[in-house]
Image 1 (spheres, rainbow, N blue to C red):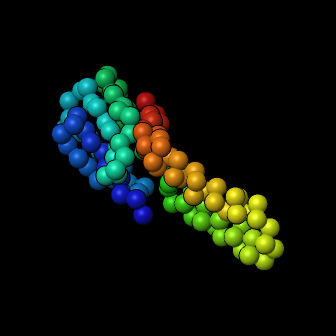
Image 2: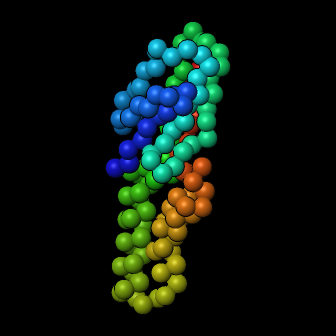
Length: 120
């Protein structure tokens, strides 16, 4: 659902496809990598030294498809139980996934996208 991009050295923009590697051969070191989705930017990741093997970088998002659908199902279950029982504290539980995404999306935007080195 979410389109992610990688900005390399503040000049080259590449769209990421899910479960497909992005190979960056033509860039000289040091590399500055920033993940973005249009509204959010991750903290910059710097690669300064050459390694014999490829460096695998993982781009993470707080609203990946699994978490998003898990939150929707979690909310739907608690809303359904609330409508059957009229037990109002369940509304709090039903809105927790939405509140968490709101917090990460608007209040902590630099933590919404992450870049980490998976293998050196």
